[in-house]
Length: 334
Image (cartoon, rainbow, N blue to C red; front, side):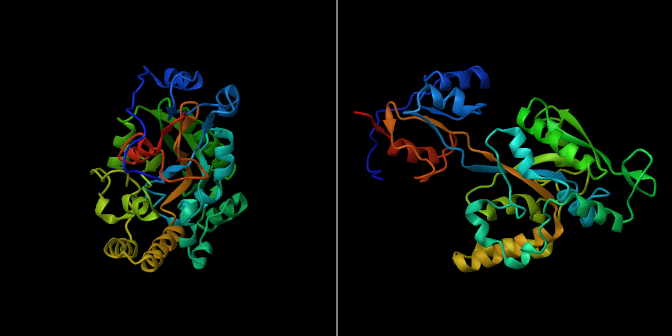
């Protein structure tokens, strides 16, 4: 890639009054670069001009089931593990049909799966509804008269928060609710306005179970440092930093993340991140669900040089300076 000078004269941004209008501009060929969710994209976009209309949906930010580690019963790691074992991310993403990619139980992107130590796999909370029921039974839970697991008269019944109108996440929550119901856990899907009160609840710890997400960044370090490091921690009722509403504390994780930040040695970094991942898989502070796709549609009718699965030279984000690599790599079709 020659970045000494741009091949294009400029960039024109095309406005839209909403996601639906923006999607229609992409479908109708009014823009060269789009970044919106388009349902049935192969039929409604690619099929209109198979020669020129393309898309690439690389892994973006992680979406997870946030469990409040300070609120009963999720202060019990075995209950958290049972919840994780009851959830099937593959079924969730298949039903969502949004391009989201199911997350590995380690919570890391495919490119960083080599960082997952073999010993960590022994802690993987793989999809196993029968195992989830057995684990809850070991913790003293039994099916009550209402058909819900309970212990000492307290049922495993929760509200599952999701932002109002986020259709793909709402579908995910409905599937999660059905999966949890199969093991005797009731999760009632409740839509809350974004950002308030949805984010307020996460930040202040006023929840037990909620959808959550965090910026995954360029490596697993950025993601886990954002969610798990205890410098973000705050007691329930006080504001936790950013997207760390799980309220997890682990000095082993803190030490490994801090050491990772201090070294540039890739072998040492892999070893340190292996420690973080092992502790994460052992404790299950949250349940990885899927990676939101970076929605990216592009047309080669007027320009070539777009990043794609065969040439992933940069994530195709609108925001940030990464887009400059795209602008510098584009060449007009002669």
